[in-house]
Image 1 (tube, rainbow, N blue to C red):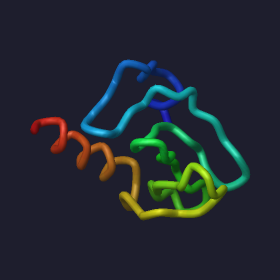
Image 2: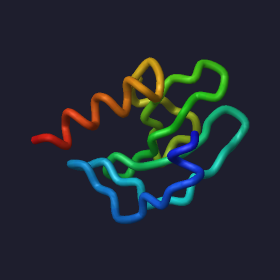
Image 3: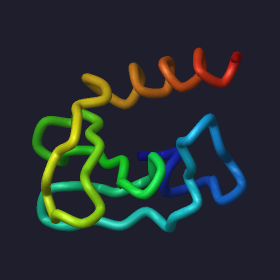
Length: 81
């Protein structure tokens, strides 16, 4: 949360993941980035990272990570390549 709310990720891109959106919330998720056109978000109740389909509100395309630390660790590894 600290990274999303206190740092500007507008120019940050790792493979097809971008952080060029202003983080926003709804009842269930905190949206913080994109993978292609779909949204990366934190599920508020479970604290897991998910990929949500852009055109179908609330439709989970896949579960990305068990928590934000594991998500950051995974994209760090991707950034190395």
